[in-house]
Amino acid sequence: METETIDCQGCGVRIQTTAKDQPGYTPVSSLQKEVVLCQRCFRLKHYNEIQDVSITDDDFLKMVSSIRDTSGLVVHIVDIFDVDGSLIHGLPRLVGEKSILLVGNKMDLLPKSVNTRKLLQWLRSQAKQAGIKVTDACLISSAKGHGIAELSEKIEQYRQGDNVYIVGTTNVGKSTFINRLIKQSTGFSEVITTSYFPGTTLGFIEIPLDDRSALIDTPGIVNKQQMAHYISGEDLKLITPNKEIKPRIYQLNDGQTLFFGGLARLDFIKGDKQSFVCYFSNQLPIHRTKLEKADDLFANHCGELLTPPTEASIDQIPPMISDTFRIKEGKYDIVFPGLGWVSILGEGATVAAHRPKGVAVSIRQSFN
Image 1 (cartoon, helix red, strand yellow):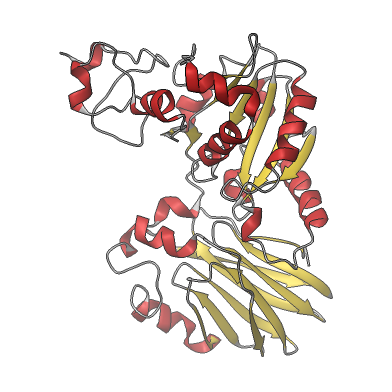
Image 2 (cartoon, helix red, strand yellow):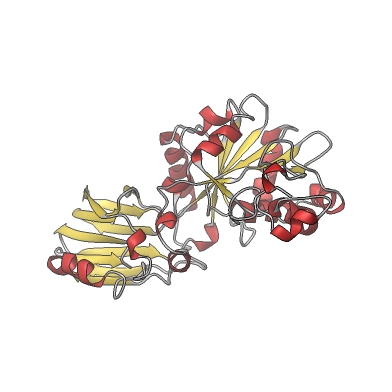
């Protein structure tokens, strides 16, 4: 049987048997079945689970163009630890004149000291800079279920009986969110348990909300600005928080440097002695050294003392570049997308933030 002639009978995507994280994957053994489904549709039908797959920017653009002229609500899931990398810039140009509900995921990993009101304000401002005018914004935890009930109410309020399109980049927890919604929303979990509702657009999965509308899952778009794309799977486990972050506080004099593994570093160039509060995965090693020794330390020990990356994956990392920030009096965060952030409270400071080329560092007023 020629795989290139087979389409999934669930979502219509072309069947392939080589790339598990790409649309249309199914094991070779499944090709002999009377009804051939991609693995994503198979898991939806038999286990009520949505499985995320990733697609390229171009493929995503082609797919979403099919919904531009339809009505409905767009729910845009972003990772609050990688907002810059997970916001889909210019989203309204892709989806048309739809209301957009912005959802910051992984709130359970935030320290309790974080001011969620300030965080929501910042999320809205970041979306605006990315060309996204949002109708509303909220915080959730897909993994723990926090905020899901409130989000469900907002979805019902804004969709006005129409379809709901779930969009997001890879690694934001989109599939976990949909699975949580299926589990908690009795309105349509019974429907999906008793009947399989196939998608009608290539690569989309449709989950019935009622007789006239559906929750439509779109594959996760790959954004090469995300730190996750430059490191190995093992390294990703170290930089991705899996429980509430415990802030680590360093009292620094100017002329000192903090390394975050070997993936980023912050130089304290000028200013009075002050606190640098680090919000990163509890598993990510932080190393303090003198600024004058920092370059040699990185050159000689990245992949060894400074990990991640490991020695095996160090060649995947783009060359390091830096930005200099002059911070005025007050409390500000230096944000390393996909890693975390450093809060600086003092009378002002000059710092240099080093990161892999292609990953943008930014500054914001602190949430605390």
